[in-house]
Length: 335
Image 1 (spheres, one colour):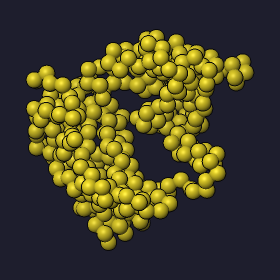
Image 2 (spheres, rainbow, N blue to C red; image 1 turned 45 degrees about the vertical axis):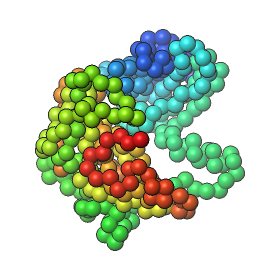
Image 3 (cartoon, helix red, strand yellow; image 1 turned 180 degrees about the vertical axis):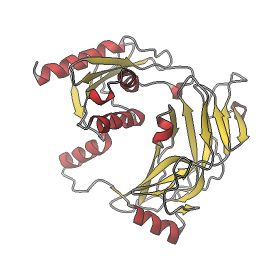
């Protein structure tokens, strides 16, 4: 079989998997198909639930199925196809950040590049990607547009230490990795592993309220101050970092969850820390498992990566007086 035929077969399998999507809330179906080195194909589709943020993406379902079969190291390629259930539109769907992380780990375990094919529902357009997708897309766009700016550079432990000690970028600051009988935290080679504090807001559906980011009901959470937080199955909790961050004007900070939690089905979600922002970082822990999950206070929870821009931004988060500027403690949604 030619390479083109293999790609077409994989995309067709992903398109067929769309039909099995459980998406009653978004009405948007996504199918994924994974090809293994032995030529076999494993498929998956998105699976939603009423707690919308805890839904499962098609790519993660397919890759988790492969892993459950003990064949994760055999992943060679994946195709993703998605579209509205009513058939409207022919747009290309690309994997979310969580799925890209899973793909990246599959690539590392396999020891070979993972081909990623994103196609329209009618297969009229197929785009090939590779890990990490955001950097590839940005670099290609720069080359095609004739612009010469280099991608943002990631900053080292030396820079992080200097900024933390000289400009209080991170307080309190731990200069080395601490890992004795705990989930590791502190300065790493190209990042900083932050700790989660002992303040938690655990989501509860006691009052059957609607989660509305424009009119958030504080009764949706139960407050707990504890060294060990238990998150119910398929639920989530809000927390905050022990550390207080002050982001330089020419730096953007990206947060990734610790692999120790990710391997247990616990996902940490944080939006990027914008240039000029400061405060405690509010963390969202999603328990994607059908079992209760533990979060350990004052231990590592997530890793922050510091990316330096080609020049300082014109308007920083502080300049526009962002609504989460200077936040302390666990901060709920604001309008």
